[in-house]
Length: 251
Ligand code: 13P
Image 1 (cartoon, rainbow, N blue to C red):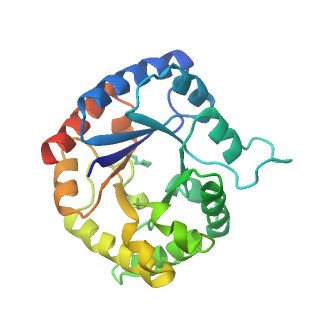
Image 2 (tube, helix red, strand yellow):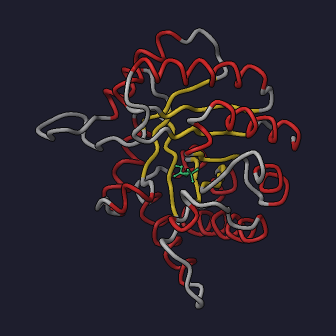
Image 3 (spheres, rainbow, N blue to C red):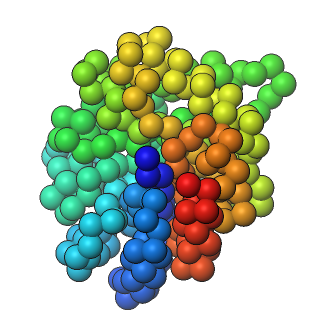
């Protein structure tokens, strides 16, 4: 099976011109990576134009966030319907940085269900802010999964992509160990099955947090994940090539 790489550009770059340059490098790297399905999540304001210029089939597009309502008086927000119309097939929901800005489990519950209703693929992010000694992170991740899947029809549970991306691994030098990720992947699968039935076995699990070409191979082969949510290494052409190459080598 192909690996999934979601490139989260976050609030970068500053201009459309730079976005086109980065996308062109991304496109070339994606052409070489036969075993990767690449999903690019640019700032929403760049999405439509990048999508329109792209003629290939290897890259899909994602929103980094969206509102759960389809329209209305929500100044500054973007709806899933608008993202869908711009060419996004996926949407990142509940990213740690958005949770940090006040997004609640209740918002996330509505967003996941709204995305599925529009036939978009939700990339549901879960993970703790920090690790404590008494394994509280399992309880927290369970609560986040419970909320995220609460309104998902049982028949659609397998369509959700779950990303474990704890805040303490984002923007760091080192990532977490593949062994710890393996443990978490088993926990996530078991929890979704417990909560929502056998469809939980089909849920794809990604890891996010300081992924790059030096650690992706081990995480892919030992971490029980089928891909990655990537920040910095997705908005740097050389680092992206190295990352995709590492995945090719491990596949
Ligand atoms: P980094 O890969 O830069 O650590 O960011 C991870 C992330 O937040 C991706 O969504």
